[in-house]
Length: 605
Image 1 (tube, rainbow, N blue to C red):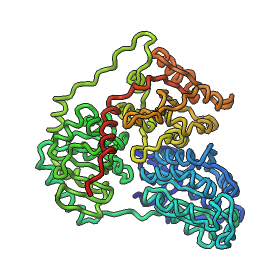
Image 2 (image 1 turned 120 degrees about the horizontal axis):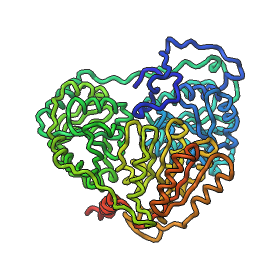
Image 3 (image 1 turned 90 degrees about the vertical axis):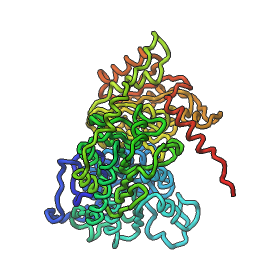
């Protein structure tokens, strides 16, 4: 963990390191930062909270107003460097804060009490599962109402106001209930610093009558956070490195696989350093796509069991040793628990722990420190990579479409591949876009995000909004299914309001295709919308927007040309009409295995 956090620039974080300022940002140690007095109108709880957000790199906070947070919003608006981005609903505000945190390293949203809090909580749970530090702020009841046996609106009709707090306790790492000013400074600062240290969301409830009141604890500019760095146990680190080096150096064809927890461990760059030193083939789990540069000469693709990149699973599963850095093995990432891996061959690195096969475990060892030290002890071994080179056959291209032939999904993604550059970022929605986007080859600097662990449909609309707001130098390319879009479509409006220019590919195949593959039924068929007409209605002549409906490759080529050319400054919404059964082969394989895992009979009692 970096030791200090101060004012940051708007550049995105390298390798999506969460809770750390971007490279080349202005970072000031705590003892070098003098504090200055501020006038009483600014020495309030609301302004202190706003200043803290700006200080850690949050320049945009996603909001939905409600009577309990209106005064707090006034103070956020008054803070230089902080923009209040009003969203259509709380769920999308939370998803936007999630997307913002993926790019900037930390995000924030603000909603009202209970009706707002219980609406945003699904997005906060997703951020928790993905290890994203999101500051969730709620405008709470008047501090005088606590303990009075009064019944308030926006509650379930009981005088106990703790329902929202109890719900957030399981999906945040710290909860601050601010209902007096004496300890407000401490609670706010503890909450924010805890989010940064643990890379998890936190909950801050601020009494609606407290935000505007001056208090002596807010009379000076807050000193920038100085976060205590996490340190490895030196003896444990040395022992773990020695045992791992011995294990790997005697292997004939070892491999490296990166996992999603490399991000929270801030170990993406050192993982590549180890790859350079050892010469092993490197792969990533699907949820870590984008965390390892795919232009690396030893990168062999995504390891996802039976739906891996071609020739990747063969190399990984035939290895006699594999090092997994920050993996998450759930039923989805393991393709219904069907990975052909053996524990006795595996070294599992977690952010602060190393487990070597069936042997020793070393705690208090940070992944970043471990990989750096291991790179100096590992022997260069290219055997497995040479095996990959021998068996590898380049992927073919989809058959050329006949004139006016209905557009196939594999043809669509062939054209999306050609759109990618270091100035783009891909957002992949839950569904077949997971599998089609996973096959995209990311050029240097191209961002990539999807929600693998939580898998909440509709996430991508808000995440696109947040990511684009966080990094205005990248053009977001979002791939969204029609069923998912129906959940959260409203906040295309917010993208237009803020002048964003993403390219949204809406795959219209008439239903929840990923669910169809797992278990089909009439509930997976949805009402078809005229999606381009919907977006045109949302546009309503305000902002820059362009829509197109494509049915064949010729239409698609023309639409992409326009989106990248004349309409490059517009939000471009391209509705792609697909056959309901046109899916990736990977989804078909994955779905059958997940279905089998879901339908296992109960164990005998």
